[in-house]
Image (cartoon, helix red, strand yellow):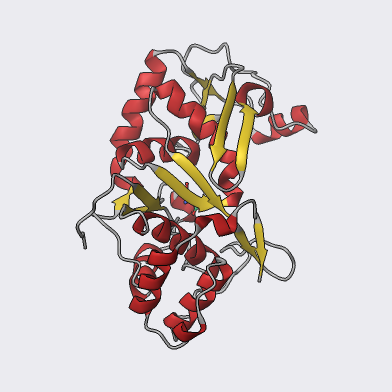
Length: 298
Ligand code: GLU
């Protein structure tokens, strides 16, 4: 599926295989695709399938089929997180060797009782050095430094991880690699230059940049697009039973999505094919049209 690429831009779309794509995730996929293709860049797919209890059988192939129906063709082979467990483990070993992580046996209940109004981990296990006999999570020791970055659409974000989040989990008690950790290793492995994703993940970004720094990796640039919400101002999501994308008339859906992305497709594209619509959208893509917008109500 690869074509000749002139730029070093590498973007990605990273759905979790927890169900079919809904309009909100297709909106993000399209924005990320257009941002890459308008810069003659590469666009990769990663299936975020580490959280095995949430995976739904057949969802990954259905998601890929939907992307193909909308002609959002990707480069290279699809990257499945579950095929990279050894890589995550080797980065964890590096952090353990540098004594940057520690085992934590705190239960949710203990923390809830203690934390009350705060979500910051109270460092109960920070001084632990021996490996506990019971199941434990791995937490990253955070230092009080300010992480500051400029999101292409949302502007400057400044955040102090130690003070605002505390030591966070990179491997869960059930042995599953935490999203925050995996995403950093994946973006590094896939040589992603810019992450385009939903605004709801903006709050995770400082921790990810912090992890890049701890691991000595160069973080990508970030662009967080608005998220689509329903009539009740709820994010369209699989959890809120958002409907799968209607595949009966993909060109009409694509035109609608371009309008939602504020690209103002001209009237003569009303009956255009998917290929024509995408060609127009790539040639005319203006990410700026989404500047500072966080939510889009349908
Ligand atoms: N898998 C995540 C999701 O579906 C996206 C992760 C990311 O783009 O960093 O919400």
